Image (tube, rainbow, N blue to C red; front, side):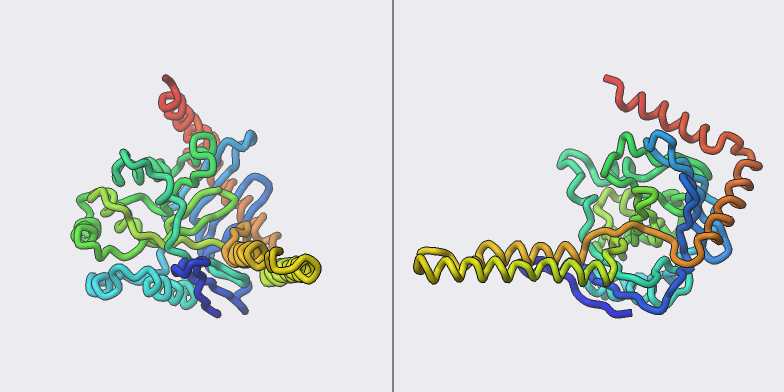
Length: 327
């Protein structure tokens, strides 16, 4: 796996671009069959989902089978790497690359400390209130509400969030107060339009308990190598713009700008966007296997106590939505 730094035009570091090769199928994999999705880790179903026919949200069922691929992070490690998002990103990139249970597969990925979640919190809303509202509730079943959270991308833990009396949460609360809390690793999955917590459930619970902003590392797929190359070729068309300005300067003199002030920033923005743009999540490998797996898992769910295929969770969340939307 190749790692390269991604930064803004004015210099600040944004994240790591991960170019993954020779990893055709990941350990943590998304499969789809029509409106149904299955997230599996190896042979273990982790999450089953069914998109609402009106595309207002997604019913889900967690199996409690998810296991984090990140080893326990010691307090000393948190103190050594505190305040350095770049060093944490390299540390987590190593965990992602080394573990057979991570979601990485062939293609390009962005692992960034910048997250839209930080921009959406109103100044008058505490961190505890804000992050509690962004967490998707319900276990084992629940509902991701696209109606209320359109384009704000809720956060779905892959296992139940631990309580404040949990020993790990108590230890992490001390680190949260000290400013040495390791980051929470989030993965944006396009089919759910939601972020999944890959690692850091207890750290997120500790940050909420202390009402501090949790440090984040945000991961998503970016455009493929072929699309990147095609986009770079298109961007090179700006050279024609420079040539056009040069011709005008030759005729009309130095009063005509050289074009760099116009073409240069646009070219830089285009290249940066190509490097960081989101690409849809998908499960590589045999799609037939995915459909069979999703179908078998869905039949197991329909045969369980949840015989309404998410209707219970949907009704519960619509009732909550009506209460929140009422004047």
